[in-house]
Image (cartoon, rainbow, N blue to C red; front, side):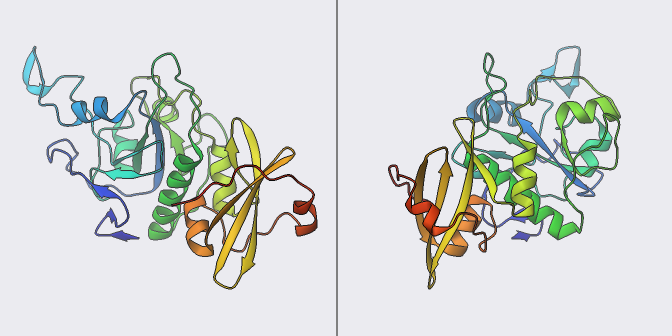
Length: 258
C-alpha cells in the first residue's frame, strides 16, 4: 500500500532533501534501472556532498544522483524518496518529473547484463502494480524506439526519447516480458537459471502450495495462498498444471517463501 507517497512495506531511508527537483512528480510511469553494482556504492553516491571543483555550488557528477528506491537481490525494497518527489535518476527533466525510478542490485562491471532474480522481478511488479493502481494508468512498453506514450521504460530509452547522456544502465537486464506476464496474471511467470517456470496453485482451505515447474522437474513452495501470490507477484487464483500431470513430474528439493 502507498501511504503519503511511501510504500508501507518498504524500508524507509530518506535521501538528501536537496537532491530532487522542486517540481512534483506526476507518477505517470515507472523506470527500472540497473545499479551496475551494489548498495554500498549507491549509498555513497546518494549521501555524498562532493562538489564540482570548477563550480563549488554544484554537486560533482558522482554525487549528482538520486532515485526513489532500491531493490535487493532478495526482493527487499529500500525507499529513499516519496513518489511525489522528482529525483535525478533517468537522464532528463521529463523522465525525472513524470516517472518513478528504482535501482536493481547487481549488473556490476563485467556482468552488466546479469539477470534479475525472481524476487527482484516480483518486487518490481508489486511496485508497478501499486503505482498504476494508485494513479490509474495501465502498464505498457514502448511500441517503437520513439514512443512517448508508454508507462514502463528503461534509463537508456528515456535518454533516447527525451535526451540526456547514455549510460550502462540497464544493459538488457530487465525481463519486461516476465514483468508484463506477472501484471496480467499469466501462468508463465518465473525464471530460474534462464528457464521459464509455470506456476500452479493447489488449494486447501486457506493454506496452499504452488508448484513451480520447469523442464522435467518441479519444486513445491508452501504458504498461505494470498501471501504466496503476493510474494511471487501472481494471481492467487492461477491454476495452470493439472494435478494428474504434476503427479507424473518428479519433485526436487522444496523451497520455502518467507
